[in-house]
Length: 109
Image (cartoon, rainbow, N blue to C red; front, side):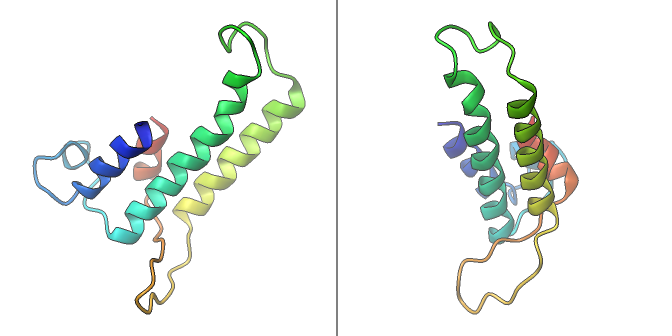
């Protein structure tokens, strides 16, 4: 549900007065909207490992060093990929576009 909400917000980013416009994220191209959704799915997919590994709340047991390091590396790599995605010629295909660090932090928040 959160991914769909972010998708709707990102598609409305070019409209003055929208939430993303007011959050100083600025207008997004369609390729940047694809990248925002990629980053959101990547982060939430990996971080769901921590919430599904316990029977109760996820903060009852601390994760080990190795899973924590893997989570940090995966989330950092996804964020760097989203902000440094190389520009490519679309040729009519759906192509992701790099987003700014501010836009990436909005997805993180």
